[in-house]
Length: 65
Image (cartoon, rainbow, N blue to C red; front, side):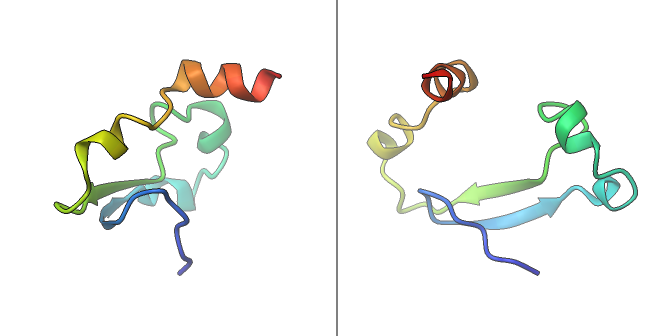
């Protein structure tokens, strides 16, 4: 077990057990079969904080610099 470092508080509600047998899915299909976990964001999290998170395209643009 390991900690998850995240800008949001929440609870892990599901993990992808398929990764135990095929960890390469994280690299080959990260937005499909390679998902890591489902996290239910705490109800106290402000909507404006959620709006500050990057979508995949914005993250790609940020790391390309």
